[in-house]
Picture (cartoon, rainbow, N blue to C red):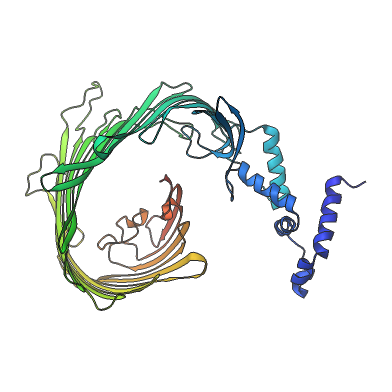
Length: 546
């Protein structure tokens, strides 16, 4: 006797074959081609509501789909209602997790541990519906207790205690890693429109010493005789060895802080901003020869715009930055204390001026010129011995922008004096960009770039194509040829492809998804570049949360 599953699929296939939709879509070509298992599942989900519901619940259990999380309201105890969430949950130390959580009166208990029977049922369902083996999900099990004793518009305090484990070799074997985590987070709205945020986490991974990570940041307005500025400061300290279940190895350790003050300027036809900033970082690693132990950076920036007429504007901007880096000069084998530190110093300044004329709301002309200088001194060097880079630049750009369509032609020239272009000869560049919206929120952008160093007999040509899918994903492809060393001219490819090299040919591709493509949340970046000759290929895989 055929099994119940076989009979069900047989009857379902007959029903689909006899349905008006199937007969209407049948052609001589499709009538003889058998359906794939995925096509069969899609058609069955359309015809049978209960199967579509099963697929939707499967997506919820995986934390995806149209309903990544489902909330259910339960009984009321002491005037507070119990809420149960299934699907994507906010587990401590995990950016993303799927499981079950229950909340009542500021208390929450949850787990991402999934019963083995449920996991097997989902795997069988995936195999039946998709006809292929589905990737093993992240085997992270976290159970936690969270309390929010303070919850208001002006303050929020959260305490959490969690215990979890993870299979570091999911799908390839078992190598479980377990740990306990205790943490606290707080947010306060202070007087004078200031806000304060802070967090601390204590991690105790099995067979490792406990480590702590903590940080805080504050932001708010600062009044002064000339107006009100915006300020932000923050500090983060991480113990060496601090790790979560998702870390393959612990952190090196160290601390870093930053301060930034921004002043907006609006005086009649003049508008712009002034920025002041300072950063400091300290390494917590064991001293080694040549290793950085601490670094400081001070920077300032000014951007101004003068509107002479409704169609004519003048722009001016300047930047200044100074970096100081302290490194270990040497460490003797029989001594743990390093010798006196060596200090490196670098300073760079620059400025640009320009004019913009609008012939119409869509058509404009821009002309700009600028210069910059960077000087670096290693430990023990005098100003005459340090490496210096000077650059002069000028550009003309015509741009036509109507709705989502954008077209621009840019002619630029740069003269640099450094190790790559010792002659200081001008490098000419012309660039054409065109962007146009497609169907379904997609956007296509193409770039043609030609650079030429006539005196040194060097040139470079590149063509790029970019396909943007709303704010969810972006694909870039580029082909470049020429003997002009890369890095002489500015580029939009702020990634592994910008490393200076002189490959005569290079093919590169990049795929960004999520926040890496301009959105928010979890982001993924995949990049690969293949170069001709003896130049090595380069690749990068990155994950970010925004």
